[in-house]
Length: 410
Image 1 (cartoon, rainbow, N blue to C red):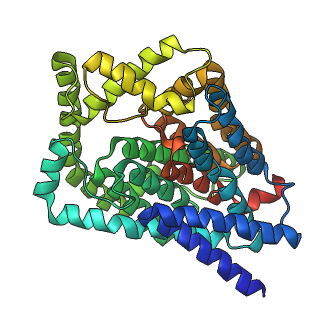
Image 2 (image 1 turned 45 degrees about the vertical axis):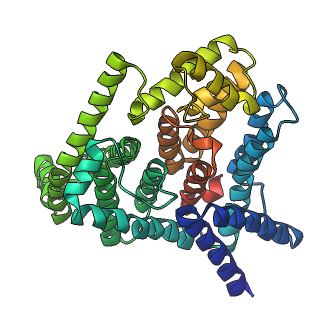
């Protein structure tokens, strides 16, 4: 019976990952299944929320909905947003069940390997069509990916898999996957993904180097058994095959990164000289954020309400550029919260978003700290936490990143 229950949980999580990659509908169905499984486990008294601080954090996400509700409490758009944010407690319940039945390690691997399989398609296509890829990136377009061709959220998925790969026990597989995800993120040339990968990589290795330095000092004080110099130890790591391969991949990806940088600078100059042009992706983002900031100036304290974000942006965009806006939301989660719920709603939302950093410091859960910082940075340029993919990519890595050796201390 125990084996059967584990298999059911693994199958539902597999559906979650498949839904994340290929189907929004399946992702929603899997969220409903987590509610059902959790209710069954609660009925059988098989769940314990006492040592789950992330459960309170997940449930409190629904409280962020209230500051943008009172402006138009009966508007349907408000409840669409509520349904999206219900994913936080649904994911929390699913993750608690996963940890309760002891399949967290298996689910973590499903998340990682699912990302690796999904990344094979764009990476192989790029390697086989490098000229076309350079042309796409040069004109501000992105290579086709899964996840409804949402290349930005797809790159965040790869970054989350990169973070979780550091927790794998098999060192050889761990190095291969870390190298693969770094390569895929670089080759896709999505700026947000590259920044998140840099945050993860630097944060992880800063901790590793700090731990190594402490051990080294202790060893030097206790004994002098190893006569090799510190310079030798550090330099020897650069001659590992994985380091050499990664340097070659980095050199190969430089033309793609160069084209992306050129396009970004060109797009920026065009907006400054010619103004809004719908043919330039960054220009569209700047234009939408520009009118959103103007709307915020007139609704700074209470905001316009969640239901009025789209109409307000359309109104100000029409006044500013004399044409409808191609998007009904700002390209910043912080601007979304500020426009919808005002300054109080923004401050409460930021405190909620950064809470896992404090919690991670208290419980020594390094993954919580790194991933929360990465998501907070990504929210500067995207409204990641108002839509289905972004919420799943925020919450699941936090739960999957829990170190088993620290669970008893939570």
